[in-house]
Image 1 (cartoon, helix red, strand yellow):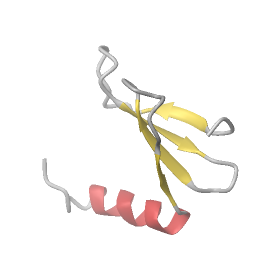
Image 2 (image 1 turned 180 degrees about the horizontal axis):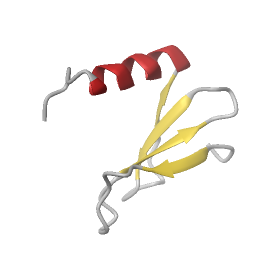
Image 3 (image 1 turned 90 degrees about the horizontal axis):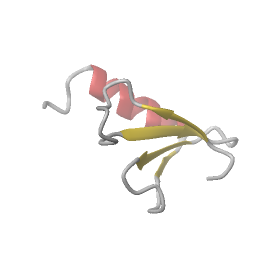
Image 4 (image 1 turned 45 degrees about the vertical axis):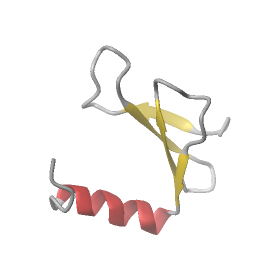
Length: 63
């Protein structure tokens, strides 16, 4: 994960209670919790990540 380009969610609060997405050099996407960056990140293949983001945008996972 050292090669990941990490970006914090724009929905994150100021108390470090958020997630970060990292784009890997392989094209895969990783997601981690900023409170515990030493824990393993979730890694998504490109197609799976696109499907996940589309489902979020379409409201498939209601809050």
